Length: 181
Image (tube, one colour):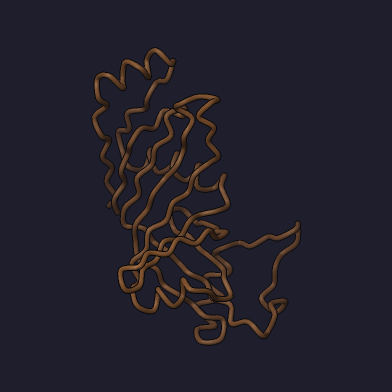
């Protein structure tokens, strides 16, 4: 069962929020928070996937699909897979464009931590197909079919199931809320 924790709002920050007309939500359950979190995840398309190897972090911007709080990344290769062979623990972030000159409290973003599982089109075709279907891929208004993939590439799907997420979005009433699985 998942849990949430809302950081107490410092008095000086609460006063600024009030002055700015921002009203923060007080979640009573993890499921009510998850609804807002999923809305944010669904309206975005790019996440920054962070992997490590030999204490050297690597951040890769990638397109993603989600199902609930599970993230799916389709890729044909790259250094992230070299890192994931050594360490399946990942972090990711998703943020929306932010212009401080248009309003200081307009930042919106999440950070997540969890474990990645990789399914290869060639090596785990059944798991790959299942993850591909879960992604519900639609590109340029048509269904993308696995048979249309270039055979030269061994496409892979990275499935990330976070065990912890931290989300902040003051303009929508969310300030420093942490979710754990």
